[in-house]
Length: 235
Image 1 (tube, rainbow, N blue to C red):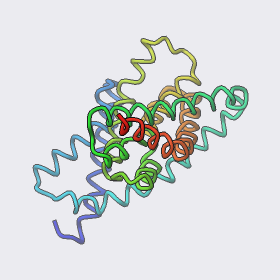
Image 2: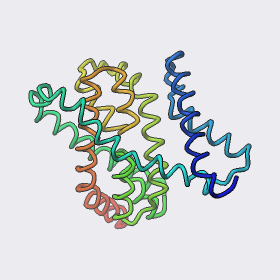
Image 3: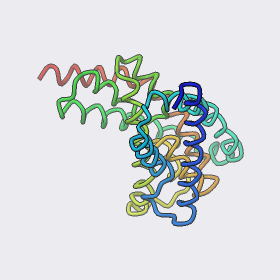
């Protein structure tokens, strides 16, 4: 593949593979056939079998990634439609998102520390539960490895979208607002895509969780990570 053709071919391949994965999911509706999970797997196989270097593919991938920010902003549309629901439960929702942010930071960071991960890896894990652009920015400020954080964010989102609905059903979660907040807080944009399928309320509250989780994590991650590292360093 020539350098000039790399970007457009990467974009076309990505769009076609994802469209096929979305169509498969629409027909089968099995959680393990999450469109993003299927598309990522298919693209890895395609790149490996064709011998195309990831660097060449990423020239087009970066153009697609650029639209992550506008896509998150676009979630404000369903959010605006559900303002009455958000206003009615505002305090409870803010408290839930704040707790979700703390749990997301502590669980990932603490696990990495206990497993003996290097400091840079620990710092990269901390913001894994927020959307990719925010997570990479937080990881960079902390001194982590932004590309590693991006991989962890995507993995977290896919896992949340696949397992989240089943776990909430087993836990007896029936509130539509709680359903959306949980998916947005734990699985960011990928979870929100799943929440939108569930309903307007779920999609709107999940979109709200993405934005507030990003803000809370950017503020809380540095002191929480510093505290955990100092506590375990002293042992």
